[in-house]
Length: 390
Ligand SMILES: [Cu+2]
Image 1 (cartoon, helix red, strand yellow):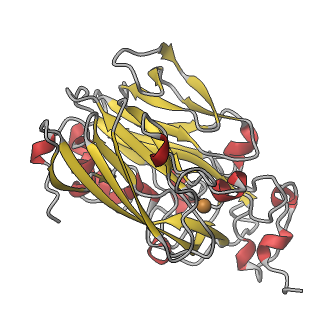
Image 2 (spheres, helix red, strand yellow; image 1 turned 60 degrees about the horizontal axis):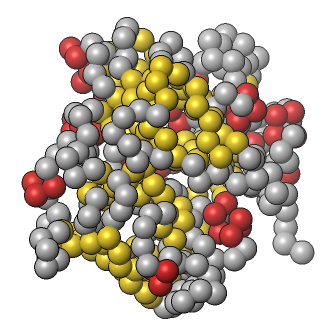
């Protein structure tokens, strides 16, 4: 028998109901009515906060995970994941003049902190959950060099057109890539859209909920209109392996964007590549406060498939593109409209500011101008100008 750990104690329902005293800092990721953002605006990781008489009331946000996650220890930051597109490396051209892009992806085991003080033994692509955001233009030839350094067989299964040999399914063609083995998936990016990739080893449910997925964004060749672009994967974690999720999030860390509101500019087009990767729950959703948005189902059209809505839903593996323009300065919530998910971590803020206040909004959440550059250099940048030498 292994000694019990925190994950063993925190069951799905008890997660909300447990109370505790000061000594158990590992339990700090419980919900308390506390305006943590207002009290603790610094993004610098600090010791988890502890509930007291003083901070269990006084809240404009009724419930949130308290404390900070150590992003440095994790090796990734959900805020950076919003904008860190991986264009691979340009290694040549096809005979008919299309770019050939090469990506190096590894699989491995890694422990990650998914909420303050709550750790999860993940299986990950490139040591992060979600894996790198693979981005390219429609028609590009992709060469994905996949190496498995993990403890289990894994694959990479991309959504999109490709030959059966490149489908990355356990038991078919090349099948699962065993620990210590490697395989190169090669296919043309098609169609354009907001897609995904994930491991397709069996049992599939386990490999996905352990963290083996990522965004696969294929831009139309003509690009999309200039916008501030973000990648959001809605995910969740079954921390006690009971077949239900205990922590929900966008980009892995519960309530991260409550603690650090995402800076956007009033009047500017915001585009979100939204993907639902949660296991165990059939439906996820996205609701934006005080605004309406257009939605492009699967991102495979240039015209919206839904206009002027404020909530959309996605079943597992579904995805799309959201576009809206912030109208007034202020903080606007976005969250699953499934209240339980929101309370268990899937809730955040946009911080819409006028252009003059933008730099300050970046600093407030530990960002600099380079973050904003990445957010606005997505599909609007001609691909020949992308520096892939770094
Ligand atoms: Cu796997």
